[in-house]
Structure formats: C-alpha cells, structure tokens
Length: 382
Image (cartoon, rainbow, N blue to C red; front, side, top):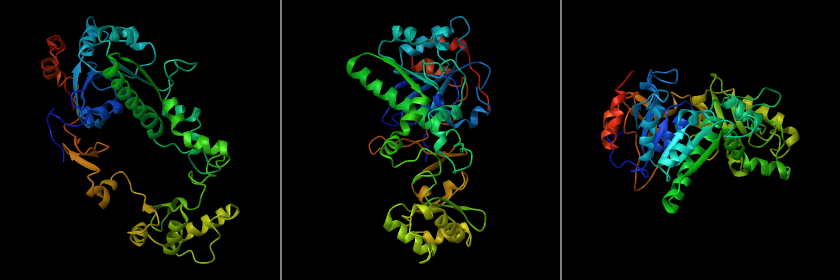
C-alpha cells in the first residue's frame, strides 16, 4: 500500500520538475513523473483550483507539492525562473505564446538554466494553421482520423472519454519526450524544447493501422475491420441482466474454445466467411442473451477463450486479478489506479495525497533554497 515522504521512491528520484498549473494532459504527465519518483512542484495560481473539482480529490496532483505564484504580478515570473534554475524539467500547457508573454517562455527559462528540458503540452502544437485555436480532445482525435475508427458501422463515432487524445496522444508522448530530452541533457549538457501536440501523438498511435490500410487489410470505415468491432469474435455482447461480455477470440484455437463454451454448435457460419459475419454476430448475441454476466463469467473463467466481463469503474478494483496485483490502491480514503509500470529495483507507490494549492511553499522554499517563495504565502483548500 501507500507510503509517505519524499525519500527515494522510484527511478526518477532526484529529478526536479516544475509544473505550471493547467488542466488535462499536462497535469497527468506531471503526475506520471511524480509517480516515478520525481520531485514535482506545481506552481498554482492564487485563487483556487483551475478545474471544477475540489483539489483534495484531484488525483492527478498526487505525489506532488504545490507553491503559489501569481505570474501576472510583479516578480511572479522571477519566482518561477528561480525554481527553473534548480529544475531539470518544466511542463506547461498554455496556448502558444502565453508563457512567453508571462515571462517564463523557453528563451527566458533556458537562459537561466541551459540544461533545462522545457516540455510544452498543447492540442494543435506550437505551429501550424490551428496553433492559436481553442480545442479539446474530441476535435484533436477527429482531425487525425482516430475518432473515425471508433464505434459501430452506420452509427456516429463513439467518444472514448478523453483517454485516446489527452492522455494517450498527449500526456504519454510528453513524458516520453521530456525523459528522452533529459537523457540528452545529461549526456550532452544542453536542454531543449519538447513540443508535444495531441494531434501528433494521436496520429502516431495509429501507425500500425496505417500500415494495414496501405496493405489493403484495413478498410477506411469504422466497424468493418478485425479490431474495430466489425469482427463478430472481437467485440462486446449484452447479457440477460443488462451486463456485457467482451470477446477477443481472434486466434483459431482461442476461437474454437470460445465457440465450444458459448455453445454455438455446428450451425454457426465459418468465421472466415466475411460475408456471413453479421449472421455469426447475431448468433453470438443470441447465445450471450440467455445468461447473466455472472453466469458467463463463471463459464469462461480459467479458459483461453479470451472473454471477460465488462466491469464498471467501481467494480474493477474488486476483480480478483486486479486485487491480487494491487492495480488499484487506497490512499487517504481515495481508491485510485496504482502507479505504473512496475520496477524491480526502484519500486513506485502513491506517497502523498493530491497537493493542495500552496500547501508546500515552506518545504519547497527550504529544500530548493528559495527563501523568496515565502513572500507568496500559503493557501490550502479542500
């Protein structure tokens, strides 16, 4: 379970990160760095949270510390630059040009600390016709073709929460970028700017599918392919009690086991006959509708049929496999996903609850040798 303190807690122990408070993919990327052991100091603005939930519940601020700095006030930029001078990485998620206008853009920061990795998180990127436009996850994945692949044929695209754009195409690519640039800075002695755009990452995620498209093995329409729900043995089916089972029986030997346990019988169409896929889908759906989710879960338990119950967010932590691996942990009364991935020599954990705005000003001022931070005072909520 969770531990506390800021001692050695992961492979990034000793790495210092300054995060300029924002929403979405930037804070998540900074959380991942903090989960891996980095000392992440979030620079919050006076006046409370930048998102609509109480700071005490904002899990993307776990394992971090917070100081208050008003970047629009006289001396505010100087206080951030003092932090930058002592940091390895900075993360910001403003629109292009905003950090520069606030006095904490790449030029100012790299002048103060030439080894700094300056990570920029945006949807459209730092340049291009849309760079100045507002946007959100759904628009980014729409333009890259990613959204067009998700959902059933003949129906509108399905919105995958903000996981594919903000967090997969955005946060994870920013983390890869700043860690690669940190390696360069430590071997070559020079920092650089990392331009992480959600449109770039979301496009990159579909690399394999673009290869399949070029080879003629992927149709450029949703719900018509092996991995997008078009295949009757790769999708989800409703059970008699309104639950769902997920089926991924792609390989022939797994499909054979699946078909036997489901009770398809000899009347089932050949799975390789694409012209009869809809007929096969209807048969599979009919079989699943005869039992509850719990009954089907028991039937497929311990088999290689590649079938799993579709669990809700509240149900998932109680699944025996996830419980055995401690995939979810409880810290401060909040159940949450545990840090990932796992390390044999430098284990990671949830060390501290979400940082409240300004709560760590004194500690950071002392440990980073920045007495000037204390002039901002403290502010905690939640």
